Length: 433
Ligand code: DTR
Ligand code: CA
Ligand code: ZN
Ligand code: ZN
Image: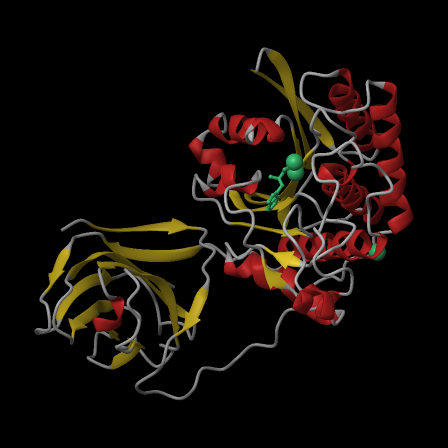
């Protein structure tokens, strides 16, 4: 059995565990988060005007391999350099032409927890690509400039990216991720993607990949009384897929492309039912007239809200953790099994926010009951069985108020399969103090 303890900065998504005993945990007042500034719509539209001018001066587009794309990169880079960002241009080759990614780091913050936001800067060859994706590029640029204007000092490190050759198949963002060493990838705590956020007949769609990022973005719209829907048109269809595919938490916003707005959506958001969210998608008419100002403004402000919130929230202090990675088979509909960790060298009691992270492979997780057993035998219920939860695996972190327990001793994860059929095993689990 491999049992080891090491210190790690862990960012955990805590799921409150049900307690079988002990007083309810004390809840600390939420730490106030710095409020983001308003992102001036006029500034965002000024960037769109510049991108339109660039397209007009370069054959009508800003496509990969064309002069209009490199001119777009130069425009954005100049703004960021003047604002104090550390920028770099990453070159790659695809379809026989040189492509460019632009990366901008805001100096400061914990580099081990990097919050990243990005947008593809290229258009299709048929037009200027003002909604697709000048809108995302301009909003991310203006948010970065707002960070500079505010001289923001986030707890986490901030990085922004503008991708090349997205229209050729997410080529630029894939190149960036594939050439990022694994140690650097693991430092990115989340990537937020903004591709088409000013559609003329807009919907308000939020990516539902990472719950924490999704909640942050949805909270913004709830705060302004705008209903949102889960984005369903684009799994894998924009640059967030490049990050998600290597296990990085992702999120983002979208106002719709060629799909048609329903009557219910028109009722909710206004606009025209039975008409595409963007009738000029990938067309020559995707110009500065192809933008809904309200949508662009709301989404720009939502981006700023997310950047401020996710980068200034308290970082999770490094937590000591104790892990057991030995596999333990769980008998189907049988007796409980346990896996233990030995906690030594600590003083006093366990914390009120002791975190039990489990990785259990099982083909019907509703069969499983999970308990944390303290060294003195006190049992804390982490998860009850549920007949209708047919999803696979239990990969979750539970927060337990173990402040009445001595920290040192043998802590056990107890798992029981209480329903016939479907089997599994404890893959690993850990306690973080
Ligand atoms: N692939 C994007 C447009 C697009 C289509 N569906 C989604 C969903 C989420 C983001 C973007 C998109 C493009 O053509 O650039
Ligand atoms: Ca605004
Ligand atoms: Zn496109
Ligand atoms: Zn796009």
